[in-house]
Length: 283
Image: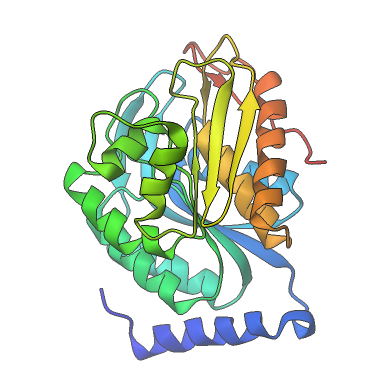
């Protein structure tokens, strides 16, 4: 879908207001472009709760409607291209977007629309490449992985894959050590990569942040239960930190601490084994 002249005018108006900085009386908002989770544990719902905990206003552009509970994703339906485009135009034309968090995209059409949108605005992007649900359901067609890699990864301030997502992006079955894998991902064009270690078996869990000139590791004790929406909450928390002016390392460090607090207070919301993350106030 091509931008109309009206669309481009709306996006440029938002960019101009964003660049005005201190003269802009609007609060800073964070935009989540992701799918809706009817169970409330992940996706748009988890992102909005996280933004609120960090004290920032949350905006949404819903890419897909999913029917899911604590056990499985039962159905997923992408929204129309026009509906996604309209949501993006609406928020860009009115709000001051301080950061964008991208989660589930669901279709090749969504990737193209979002990539064009991101090139029109001036906001850092945290890309959580949601490819498969924690229960094993494909959330992005395999043939769309290359498009995501080529069109969206180079626009990201931070890419936050887990181990299976990293393998898919690199088209590998076996991965090297975390730092080497993160550097391979960095070569795809993102400014930085946070490779999450939760899907591995090591204890402690190690998340590895790699930037062009630095590597940082965040270690956490592996907890004896699974939880739903950890990647959504972590990436949303990082985006919130960036939007409020934290440097990348500081935003990741704060988000990692927040996620651990949310995990320690996670609760059973349904009959499934996966717990739902609590929403502690950020401090």
